[in-house]
Length: 176
Image 1 (cartoon, one colour):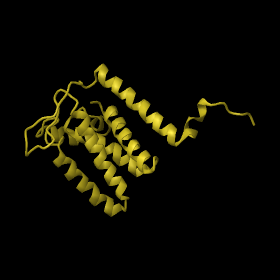
Image 2: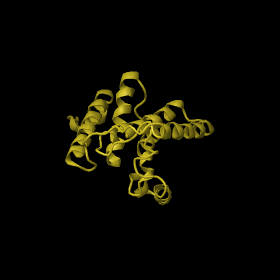
Image 3: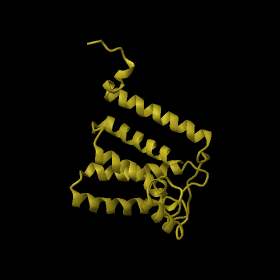
Image 4: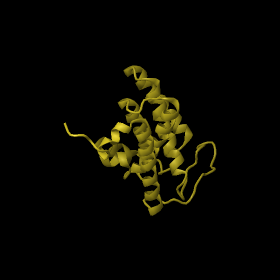
């Protein structure tokens, strides 16, 4: 999946949970860590979204990709747990709320779920199991782009239900 699809899917997952549980829709650190978590697993790919955004991530990605293949160990539950533990330590230091750390984990897991739809798939339980979960949606295909559009529509519907005022540009406004 493309980085934009990963980020949108993570946002949809969070908004569904937030809507159901009455969680905030606009907490900056929560949304930042959610999106960051959804993009981080592709740090093992030199052309991943984060690698294309920053010199630091590009260098890190190139280094990692020399030792680890794409959708390898970084695309596993173990990597999600380790990365979340690191974020948790950072969160304690900066006094971030627990929800932000949970959203990082949600973002990471949503990435793994989405990549499970790819023909290459991922090994969720690597290095303990070689079992691969996969399906048929190719990265960048018309099917993925259609899925991305459906995700955006779903996000819009949820945001409209919670914050209809965000869509006020579509309604008639009275003149002053």
